[in-house]
Length: 465
Ligand SMILES: Nc1ncnc2c1ncn2[C@@H]1O[C@H](COP(=O)(O)OP(=O)(O)OP(=O)(O)O)[C@@H](O)[C@H]1O
Image (tube, rainbow, N blue to C red):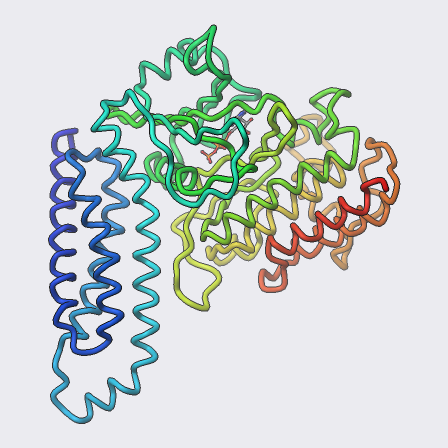
């Protein structure tokens, strides 16, 4: 489909969704049962309708989130319609009474699905703002603001491809190793040198079966709705009609946690040299993950390469291209996803074998990051036997660092950091927490708030009195 055809298809989808919203609002007025729930549902969907009607033009990549919205609204329509039907027979009325609980549950589920779609509103607002101000201005992301640094004005700018190309000096230099799993990250200045702030520009590439637009929407949705001191700061974005997609972030000048744990960052790195700095580098992203999980976001690609260290050594979680929002089916912690993604060595075995992902899958990956911090070793290593290494059977860190009972072997502790007061007790607590995160069965792993509490306690033990 060409650009014009895609825009027409999206416009049709918007018109359909808006009509559906009008129908639901009208039907809710005539509900015979669950009147309050129907009214509340109508109020929620009319908010979405208002935002949609303000959009003058739609870009093709909003088709996927709009289709999700349509499906949620069709379910809402069915539910409200059911509440408007007259129960003719006594047996039906009895059935309606008995089914009241199930009905309440269905309302909860539909509302949850609608809430999930409401997360798209910052995304849609950005598009409409961009249309109003022709890409020259900026806007504050809405959504939950956990906390923000002093220099954070919170503005995320819609940029043109020309602006991004200028900021990266025509894509001149990559950041660090430069390649993510599915994108390339470039150095830049925004506005271009000699002024402006240092930025990292991620140019999206092919994202497996999931597709570039899904990855773009996933990351955009998360970074626009969740702000946190330990989540990478988005400062701009570009999605042009020519299907080019890019994100602009504050540059994290001290690289990734991975660089420092492998010793590639030099002797001056505090993360290589001290346990305190290592635990601080673990605690920030653990807090960020806890925050994300509470807001229904599952990262799915947690690794030591997705933890960045800024100029002040504050850790920030990045790499949200695979993130998913939690489905709201009550009582179900895990949900099916179309593709199992995540880096080798970090993948939760249960998620890998079942295709069901949940917050506990991030907890497992985080456990691997903790093991890396404790041992200074990579998540997957060759066992030796060949000069190229990878010809031999690779062994995961979980296999090599834990004994048969899932306990950290004492001989694998990284010898590089200088010994510190109360270090042994603190590291024992970190090791115990990592071991629990790495339990093969997701149900018995701690949640991220438990991980945060233990890391805070371990850091507290090491603080000199
Ligand atoms: N803000 C930043 N500052 C410095 N380096 C960065 C920044 N963002 C990314 N990088 C570098 O680029 C690498 C890849 O980034 P990222 O994890 O976001 O890409 P990715 O793996 O392709 O992610 P996704 O699949 O989620 O799009 C990081 O490991 C890091 O080396």
